[in-house]
Length: 267
Length: 252
Image 1 (cartoon, rainbow over the protein chains, first blue to last red):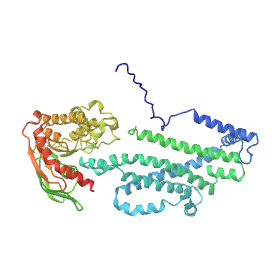
Image 2 (image 1 turned 45 degrees about the vertical axis):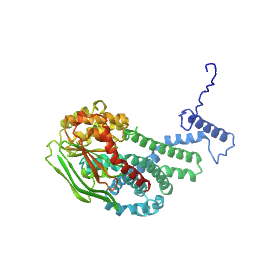
Image 3 (image 1 turned 45 degrees about the horizontal axis):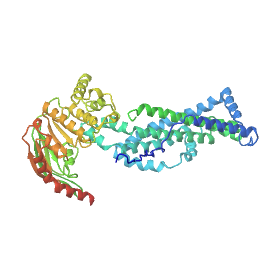
């Protein structure tokens, strides 16, 4: 027995892969590589100047925007429309979503109307809004309000429908008042879904404001892009697009920050 | 407070769930109800707690409620039902906030129930940070905070592993010895029922009826963990029912 040799082999590990590792240095490298390729392509003449300007020209366009103050003029116009329309739409949407989520009568009355208006691409309403509210600020703010209102309503009452019934029963079993159950159980339980709908409505709001400004505005990022496009000033056009990208990233970051603050009970 | 159930019936549509339940629960008594899954024992408890309507019959309470009792019929849930967005102490404060109590009084109550359930050092924790046993302790602390006359426990230990549930069962016994509350204890675990009940009610499969009621005279504190003879008897009552009930579910 003793001199009989048994060959033990180690067990091969096969549980790896299928999960993400954060390699923070990769994305800057990709970014710089793309920028270099862009630079090389445009300076060598491989990419025509009619298609893409040099990166440095876009930077100069940014610099000009800053020097002339146009950046702040256009950004200010877009931001004030965005923030006003989005805030009003979100607040109104949450209120209506709660009303639909909590009261059967209101649900029966409003839910079909919401369902009917929700799929309409809101940009199609702009001509109508221009007739109703004029060519000025009001038509644009209302367009964004409308665009954010419906997704918010649907997300809010959907979230309320999904609140764990056993928590509501728990509240009732301790004789909590109706208002306490709504405020302390239903509202916090639906907050995650409401916040993630805010991410979506922020993106919708940016799409709508640019579209509205492309069609009818003197100021705003969309108007600036429109102007640059009609002058074939691709450098300025790209500067406008980069501003929009930053706008979206900042909006996302703000909502992410709000989520971390308000939902810290999750993890 | 005493409870009296008279000819309680309940159906969901065509499905008859409970049939003619008669039951008396005396002051300071713990009644365990056992039965196969789907026999309507949880429905019965929810009806006692006023969370569900009866079709016919009546459930009545007798006796006065002490003045410091904030919620006479109070549940302890199988799934704990804690609010994940509130810390341990805030989960308990939830059930006090609707009452006109001074801040100091609330703090005293929370401190006292956390102490009684051995949770004081966890009061600032989120529910997700707690083990199942700890979560149920919070559920028990929350129930104690309203100083209930009757504790309605719906399989309070079923979601816990057997070691943890053993510990919590002993803690429940300890709590009862300090303050003889009236309680209905739903379980499917025979030894749990024997350990904590003054009276054991065995229910049949759907439609739930009372098959037998067994009283245990031994003081709760003096009971052995195992009472093989009684367990054998209860199992003999339940075995066929449980097998039938299982097949019922499989047949849809």
